[in-house]
Length: 264
Image (cartoon, rainbow, N blue to C red; front, side, top):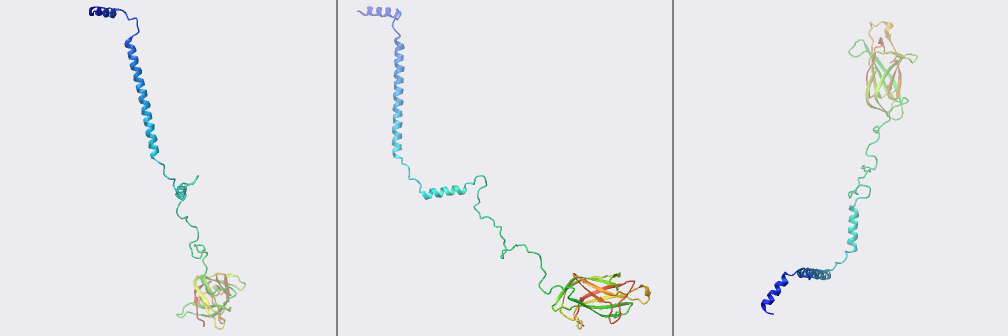
């Protein structure tokens, strides 16, 4: 076929509708399939490479030896010590406070009832006796009388008196006689040795009575005896000093003084 004939034939084919399938579509499908196959092959190859590299790395890295048993126990014990107990606060590592008695003797740190210092016991009523020594005017004169009385310890052992001493005047029936004047005094502790009426050593008491001569006889109060109270002990003395009583106008008799004496 000559070239002009071939040209005419090709033109006729070009203007004729294509009864065969689309060649360009087929080519495009083949290209897409080839690309998918290449991508799949590449992905598989990459996976193989990764697996191979991971296996090689796992073969080179070896696990270390397990920790010693003692170290593991120590770690567990430390964790247990620092872990708070269930349902309460964490345990303290300090020393618990003691509630015992800090005193060396082991007794209570607070002292008990205060006791009296060691020494002679307090005098009782059975220990005491009295001696009315004298009734006389004061040295400077005046309308008063001074009565000197000594309380002493008639027991075999010394005893002591302390606190308040109180004077009470009594009539012949033992009833109280009202007095005008101070009738009590505060005493320091006085220890009285065992003594007797021949040489009484103990507590010296001075009474004073207003014995003004101008006082009417009906107003002159002369007690039958005097009672002295020292704590739980009492002692009485007759109101006579060598036959002379102490009196006071309208009951003006007072407890003037009280203190230790050295005997007569």
